[in-house]
Image 1 (cartoon, rainbow, N blue to C red):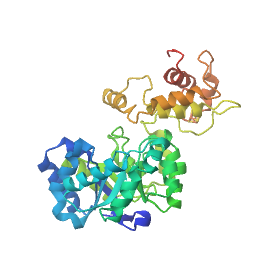
Image 2: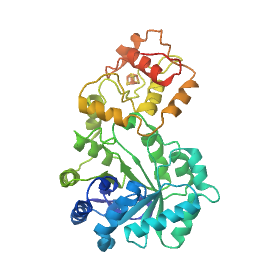
Image 3: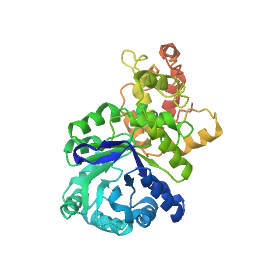
Image 4: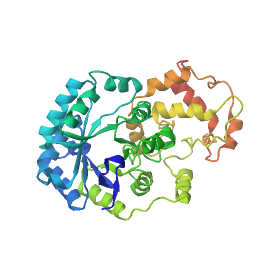
Length: 369
Ligand code: SF4
């Protein structure tokens, strides 16, 4: 399997990493078979977290592949924020994983600058991780986060972390553009290893995996971590990875223009509808934070509708979106007709309709679209 170097760690990771979350959904014997098939195919990065099934994923990995420990890099994550609890979590993880050390220990799901302060303060998680690194129980201190990278950007700037993992997919790039526009460059400046996850936008893009995987791996990332819990999924991902070629500029433009998942609802942030004193894209970005622009008030395909309902508040940032909308200088006037802007949108978005939907979601005025 193709490999890439993870920044200053110098470690060469296979471009397909095995994400351990979905192992909690299958019996241990099946997890064992999948993990060994992955290693047999040349994969060398397996990741999990103590919080996945309260240790269930770690235990399955420990039982399945600890006898092949020298063949792969192992990562787990600690989700607590104080030193004492994190130290206890890491010790427990090592027991679950049947290993004396992990190659990467992630501060798990760091969402806000306040959480970063907790992690970096005296008695915070980072203190424990540095101690465990000195003891050889952790090789590299890493960081993961989901959604808008409010906590990740200052964390990367702090220079305390060697590896970052976050979502990279062509759907959420329009909800959290800071990831590609700002965070990536900061990581590169710090020579951090960058890992991608959520290539399928938490499953939303499951019907068209190849283009989604190619998009994520076309970023400057060392590896794409994918959760897998069936033989078919593993085989399909291996095949896509084997034939991987980066997306050309034309392919990317075509994808952004014509993907049915973006359709005529997700704002591509092109700026063409901006006018003096009012930029609809500012509102649409807050809608992205609120519900990933998933609730378009249309039913459409039933399975995709159900998925959108499940995934729209996956990152729990809706209150933050409302708070930010309340301070926006130019809010939507629900009585105003914005239809003149519709003709400016190259993606056929009904801007007038979308603005009113956004106002319902984001304001506390009681307005109903
Ligand atoms: S023109 Fe369309 S895609 Fe461009 S910023 Fe406006 S709504 Fe978004």
